[in-house]
Amino acid sequence: MHGRRAVVRLADGSSADALIGSRALTPVAGDRVDIEVESDPPGLCHIHPRQGCLWRHDTRRHKRLLASHVDRMLVVAAPKPGISAEQLDRYLAIASIDRMPASIVRHKADLPDPALDARLDEFRALGYPVLTTSAQTDAGLTELVAHIGRGTAVFVGLSGAGKSSLTGRLIPAARPRTGTLSAGSGDGRHTTTTTRLYPLPDGGAVLDSPGVRDIRLWPMAATELIHGFPELARAAEQCRFRDCAHDGEPCCAVAQAVEAGTISNRRLASFRHLTHYLASA
Ligand SMILES: Nc1nc2c(ncn2[C@@H]2O[C@H](COP(=O)(O)OP(=O)(O)O)[C@@H](O)[C@H]2O)c(=O)[nH]1
Ligand SMILES: [Mg+2]
Ligand SMILES: [Zn+2]
Image (cartoon, rainbow, N blue to C red):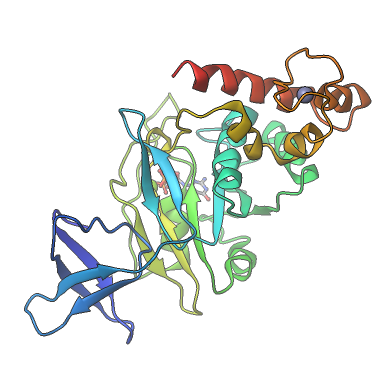
């Protein structure tokens, strides 16, 4: 999108620059829209009802829409710049709260990182699919395309993880701008400014999203946040108190599950940390 214009894909697969007809229309990537083709340039006049919404918070901590009609979140995890279990928790929590299936893409397979692979095993055990890819060797790309299928998948992950490179390997004609890792720090440069949709040859599509600064959780109550941690939410149904905060209350089924070893203490600690952080936000 460029100011009050939007790149629109037409039914025949071609693209057009459309003028956004009214101030009230705020299209996001993935929207289904109607355009008036009689005018030149064509005018975007209607946005269809949204589903599969991916939200983020903006710099003032308001909830804002990043993309719509998204079928799956793909969290890109790579040795450089690395990603902590708690950062993975946050991305997966956003997906879960938005009721969006999520998978992890262990990218840069050409770079070994046993610690990262061990970290991902915890999420595999929670039921999240983990795929392995490399934009350098093209390993795993066929499996990734099959995983996306005919749906729309959104790449999320830290700046420099390789989202744009993956998009570029899947859709060579797309040529998204890729960043260069700044030497020494392992931090990626922020090169993607708007979320864009790239159609795949066989019917699916991928969205390349901006870096982590733009996709964080928004302030919310613990009762909403817990849906971002599905195994905690399931256990919490058995807590004695409906308003149990899972923070030392008697007969807390979540604490009991941690004791029994069916829920990891790390996930509960991560949830509690986020609860306190988001409550004070
Ligand atoms: N070794 C290796 N480097 C990669 C791979 N994919 C991307 N990179 C590099 O990682 C850096 C960041 O990539 P980019 O796609 O811009 O990351 P984004 O910020 O997530 O979009 C660039 O220097 C890429 O060349 C990969 O599979 N292996
Ligand atoms: Mg990028
Ligand atoms: Zn509890």
